[in-house]
Length: 456
Image 1 (tube, rainbow, N blue to C red):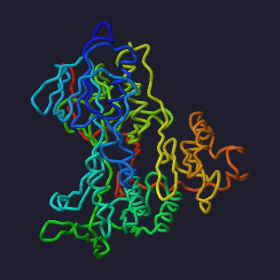
Image 2: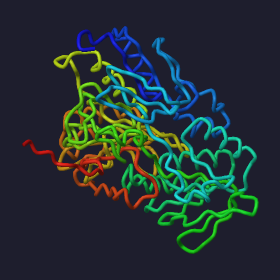
Image 3: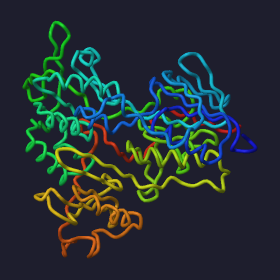
């Protein structure tokens, strides 16, 4: 591909949302060469948000969440086989079945997997689940339909909260444990997490904050029967869902020389991967949940996002840059956006709420359960979250994109003295939470030993 960038061989590792959209975008950009998509699951790309919502409610089958193709990417699909290694010099991807795929350009879109319960024997008990794949969702939905007497959800992040919401909608008794002070506090800060906690309890959730599960218990037949908690109590339950966040799928890159670590694969704003010394690569690109990229609106901190919209937008930028020469390449500067439906609330976020030191309740009220909260950092707007007020979000997105001063000017709030109503954002250290956040600032090097090479 040294000549025409629209010819040659491209391999995409990750038959995911990002992988599919990148494949489509490559063809839309005029790529006419060989295109191979590798995926470790045996299924074509499918949509994950419905898994914790419609599937658990019994409104959709787990195998009916396939992603529609916007166009036929004319790709060779290698499904049900893992990538096990990358040789960046020889430009080859090694697969678990022993095959070696040559490439001229590579896109890594391997995403994340559910963080497992740390004790393998306890995790293997019948009735203990994680929720990430369509198989996970199908098995959990089947068990919820049985139904169980009580469901234990470990972790009060977005996934854990959505699972709890689905359980209550099905009339099931559910307990949520969260090491932090409230559910969603890592994503939304203290003020909105209080609303989330109140909504869960008002809907009958047995919410245990400041508590951790110390052990999962089973009977002689290996069936899950309950859990021991850090306060010394024991909880009886039939089903346990471990919602401790995600692990980025980077282990297969351990010997590749790329800047790949627990926080993801570092890349530039054009989606080109860095090597372990911070040098940008020319032929390896990254997109989706597995990436870490700099964003100028957040002081060039590296962002790790587990958001649907980011996977689509970044995949399209990566595809564009893979087939266009340097001067024409464009950056991935889309603002992070996220949404969640739970306990009758429609929560939407734009920007990075964790990148804040103050908030202001700009519209509505906690009592109304209809509000807009604006987040600021060092005197400028960095994020906004709406609850049952999604139409307001576009306005606040403009404030973030233009680095508008914080607190918002009159007209951005329905409260005349917004400056007098600012509160600390109260975003805790993620280390104090049960779950990993779906958006994280990761402005540090991956954990790796480096060898300093000095010229003779």
